[in-house]
Length: 157
Image (cartoon, rainbow, N blue to C red):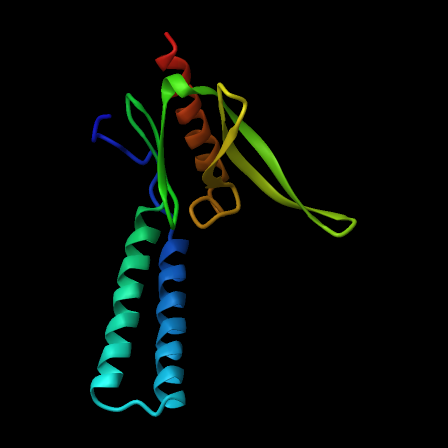
């Protein structure tokens, strides 16, 4: 597969809020760990270095998170893993109104983009209308959905 992946949307500013929130939470975790275990000297530096390395890796994954397209297919980068779907593997690209059940109640969580494979399985794309990238930009969410759908349709020709 080609290496010319592009993300058809700019990341939202909410990502930076998440990164800042995680930095504060990890700083608190580091402080609590040092206090709880009465660490000094090298112990403090080891814990701080480990937590800082985890934050850098997490920040990189948050910044890379999203859906990328190329002439070959779709690359979905999540926080923990990435996957590539070739256009020929994809039967369709659809909007899906996501709901979650909590006991007897259904809770609407907004629109997502799903990819349907030829074997009938569906793949979540990480694109969520209420997510950090599209929360205040609903037109962009629809435009990204149309871009992915149009690329899929064009690949079938």
